[in-house]
Length: 456
Image 1 (spheres, rainbow, N blue to C red):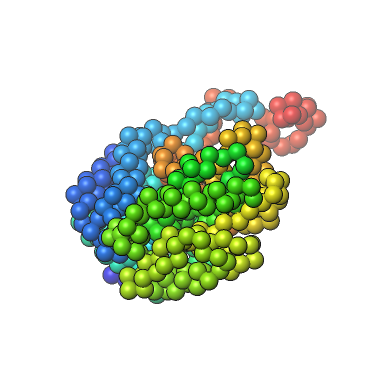
Image 2: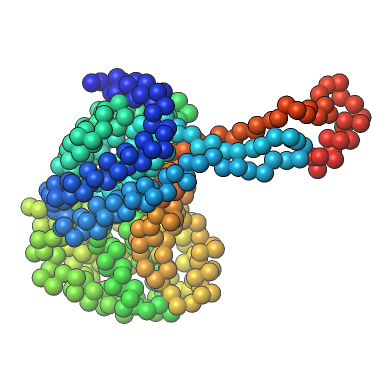
């Protein structure tokens, strides 16, 4: 079936109103949950094939998070979907005001390769909970996982409700040339700009989940052992191929050498046999990315790691010193296991440096100082973040996750996912047993005084 025909069939199905029933939505979410459970082994095998993800990392960062999101939506979708009564101004006497939660219609979900299962399923849960139909476009860079998703969806849902379109750039272009009611895109800033440009043709609302160079700031009060342990885990998770990965460290100059030693210990503990010999260490997704990342290894001074194995597209956890903001590695999001270390003299200097940079998706601040924490968080704009940890702020259904400025727009997870795929229709239900005439022509001085009394 052609893409145009898929979208037309979904629009016709949506217009039957069957997807708007809360019971239908809950049943669809339960079907999705059962499909995830039933296909767990197959999903993990696909993640292993595409990225060499271990079962532990695959379940922790992909399947487990999606199952939790799905259960949360099943529990709460009934309350989320209820009309919301709001206060009515006295000038509108006598009437009732309320907000209806209305699905957009046919949604397009375009997902990336770095967490190919989680970043496809999480927005789909929101689309289903809100009552939409959905076309899913997974990444061509992770074909095994994309095929599992396609098989899983087609076995549980009719194509006129939810379907998967596989392929590469040709299919992406074809999808973006069609009128959807909502577009949810996760990926690079460069492609995000193209998606936004294409969406503007139809004035289609969009969510852009992008990325950027998310800094980890370490002040002079921080516990360096904790900082090194947690940052090593966060940075080298998925071999650094994480949109909220700490991209670089900006540390007080008095603590740099000590931190590097603590980071060395943390990496050695995580990879006792060396990352290149670790059968569960994630590989770089393809040759293009491996070549791009390998070029960064010539920047500055390598103080930890630096080894590569091109035969399996593997790069050791690598720490670079003698880096500045003009270095090539600092000109784009790294998206790999390379960790530059930069320094600052005082916190005001660090804040001024970061204010001049594009707004990142995440910011991590390691400190024992409440004053410093409040200063950093009130002075800098970023999507979200952590104090004395990294990445974990996205692993909850109780807070939205998303970027700001160059790192994206819109947010999701939990109720925010439902809200993202929902249009709120504002309704005033005016009663007919009384009709105040002051708004009607001909305008009089008396009515003018009444209008001013009500609207002041």
